[in-house]
Length: 392
Figure 1 (cartoon, rainbow, N blue to C red):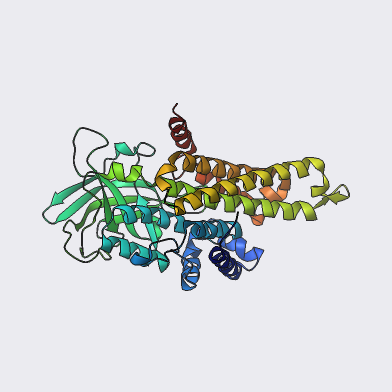
Figure 2: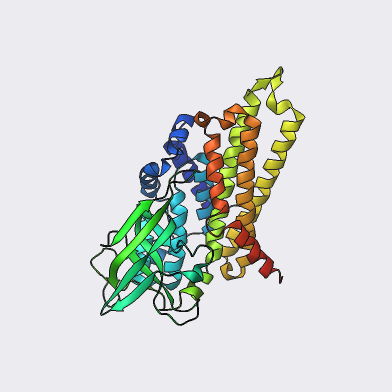
């Protein structure tokens, strides 16, 4: 992978920041435990203060105006070092919809917030509408100059940290499942928004979101929607056209997940190598055993392949080819997340009791590594997308 001087300088800045946030293994274990989201605000603030967030977002909207490749460098490095900024990936994903379909006020509100270290949440899925988003039942009904939103969302990443929810709701019942869906920008401080955590096998990331008669503005003649008082239009894009909107731009989300998965896999591999080079059994380090060495060699090779594919796609996104990468982005997300999970599982196995014990952190990495095979479109769905892309 060849980086420009600007990208090399940015990566050096990111590495220095990560080293300051996570100076030692004890800090890493504390920041990546099951309550890691409690530490996210401080990590976000540190990265924002150094001007490291939102570098790929348009300069005209308050972003850095630089490359998506640099964004991937940040995502990979923070995942590799254990800096708890998983929520940043969600914010970047939400930003794609605002940048493509939102008005100027919405774009600036979101971009400036991300640069300052605030979180945005994609609020699409429901109890009966996970991979099948066309089954969404949350409704937004027009009442004068407002939309009134009612429904329940579930498995919503980082809603508890977010400034806004990007809500997928049905604004018209046309009898066609994919029609009549709209996107709305809802400040989390709006009356009627209730967010409750869902306990998972890893760090707290997901929530139930209850929208109980939530009122947001329908008019578009006011400046922004940065607070709950009703400034600007909440509608993102054209009314009833959300299916078309969300069907495009998903390549970036999948590449984002791939970047974090590559970083997570590298972190697990680094810890495993550190263990087998110092842990002695039968008079020699474990890493001297051919069976161990060969398994680690396979893991390292898989990660290098995923990284090369990741930055190839990132470069093509920088070249404006995002809309052509739907199939390959699914491949990258699928492969990188599976390699992450496999690497963490192998690390637990090869570290033995030290992998299984909670005080050493590897079992927590394994639990975290399962998540990217599910969110952002389960890997079973990614295989379907790839199959269709191949004409099957």
